[in-house]
Length: 379
Image 1: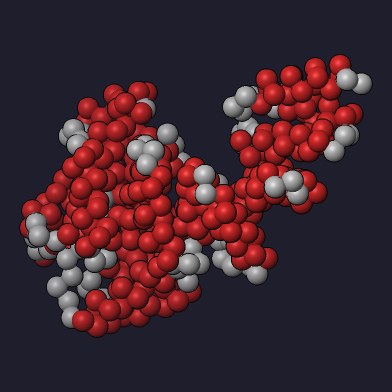
Image 2: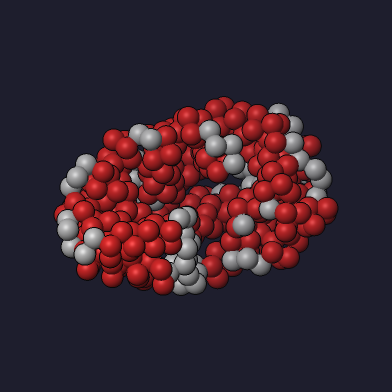
């Protein structure tokens, strides 16, 4: 459900009529953000603000550093307030610029983008009405900016996102459909074309377009080959971004390429042990432990698999707040299966009974009941 307001982003990173120094420094800072070099990015954009104080880009991208801190650990809300405040600073500066010139394209783009990001975080925190209000406010601002600069390929990012999700949301999320009456209708195919254009030929927005294409091909189009095309692009460009690495690992799992998935997730564990930013978080380690454990069990490495599933389970107990995640449920299922394979029937039964006390995920309850029945009949 959280994904339904992805189109709110609409930040369309923009038509800089600036010199090559400005352009180069913005590009450098953007790459630092995506490669999770937050301290370096902070320095880059604070220096940009000092040298170009009248341009809103520096403040906008400072906020994007906090946005990526949020993305690395979505359950942690400690960065929310500072992120909102930085967006308000962007909006204020843009409003001041627009008082002087209503056709200031950069001010329009960054104001629309800041409002869109504010809406996206509100959607992630399930403040749906506020998120919808931000979407309604941002869309005409960005449309106005796009009309002033129609040839900018980066502009296509926001419209591509909008066209795709406005078309997909009503069928994917029927409960949200009534909210869509406040927005223009979308066009899924047009949205994909706009996103691909930006992803392959854009300037500042190409990485974000690649990211959205990767996720939509995975989640909605079920096209793992296309999803991997963009996951590979992103990970090759930003090899120390845990979000991109984990996405490529998930896609490899869906494609059945367990050799690649195992390699990627083992590397996540190695980087977590070296304390790489974002890799050392419980959510990253849990996911990696699960998939490496799954592959180890498949190869008959039961002791290694058991250790990894136990780690996954313990981390899940820390992470899961409302209900047991699929990681938690399945880790106990596989631990029970390993006990059963190694002839420890009583221990296996205890674990299967534990599964029955958890929520039913997939066919976990039917597996547990069937296994308990079989194990008890062979005592």
